[in-house]
Image 1 (spheres, rainbow, N blue to C red):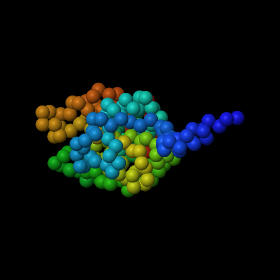
Image 2: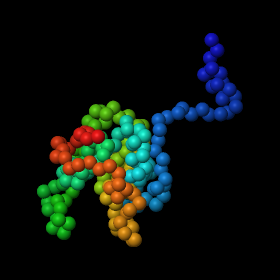
Image 3: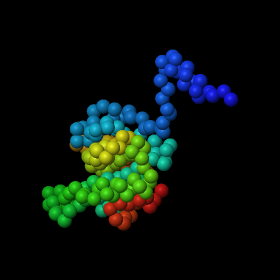
Image 4: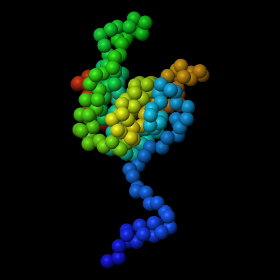
Length: 202
């Protein structure tokens, strides 16, 4: 039997043509291709707006989508519909900040243990597409860089978060992007168990 694969490989080598394997679908980066604030930048430079992330997740629902906020914040504020897991990079302490009318956030010492359990549960490989979000894009950037340090190579950061940041837009709040301001599906205010919350709602 004629071996087409060997024939094509031989011809490609003869012509000096490199045949690259076709990998899994990748998100398209347009809204934040340039101009990302330093505190929201990541080592991979893979950035999405909320709309871009939502469109990709709709087309590829198998993609792991994580929220890096404290579960207490998620239970009070809600969450983007489609979140697979809560992996809090910071957690609320018992120190109350009068100036901000909220409890201070401190680094979560268990964040990577939580992530390891989630990755194992979902069978996530280090080259799989992972999409990360938070409130305003700072915590999710930190989480991306932590995953990069662990060898992950395909972690995408939602820069605008869910409410947007008025301070970044002199003419008013961010009405172009941001999950809620774009009118994208938003989940309820559940009391979520533990620090690693796996999907309860679809």
